[in-house]
Length: 191
Image (cartoon, rainbow, N blue to C red; front, side, top):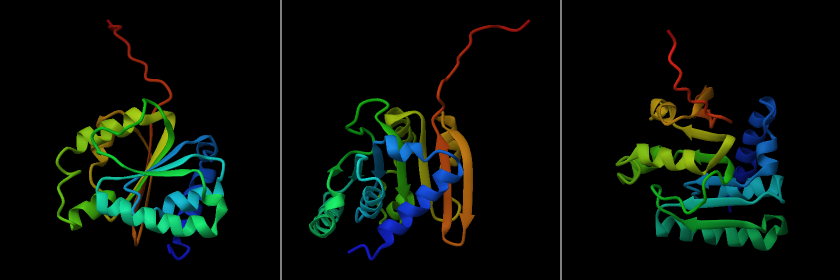
C-alpha cells in the first residue's frame, strides 16, 4: 500500500546516519515517527531493523485510522513488520518518559498542517519542540524533513538542540538536530 516508498525513505535515513557514523541510533532505538501519516517510515524502518521498537504518532483520529488500515494490510504480508505501535497523541504532551527515544523523525509535518489549514502545531511550536527535546535521549537525533525553507530552525536551537546538517534538494530540506550528550552549565564568573 505504500508502493515501496516506505523502504526508500527509511533507506535514505539509514544511509544519512551511516555517513555520519550514527547508524547505532537505529539499532538502539526506540524510534519515534512524529506525524506518521500512512506509517511508511515506521514500516520501512521495521523492515530494516526488525528488532528495534518503532512508534508512530499522529495528532488526528482520522489520520491514525488510515495509517492503521495500511499497516494492518502490510503486516499480513510482511511478518517482519510486527512489533511497532501507532497511537494518537497531543503534540504538546507526548505520552512517553523523559529520554525514551534515540531517534525522532518527521516528514512534512508543518507543511502538511499548513496545507490542511489546521493550526494545531503552529499554535505552540515552542511547546512541541520542548516535548521533542524531552523525549529524546542525550546524543539522540531529530531528522526534521520539510519543504523548502523549513520553518522554526532557530526555535530548535533556542530550545537546546545542536544543528548538525542541512540537506537541501529540489524536494525540500532535511535538517539534522542533535540533543547534546551533556549540557554543562557553569556559574563561574570570569574576572
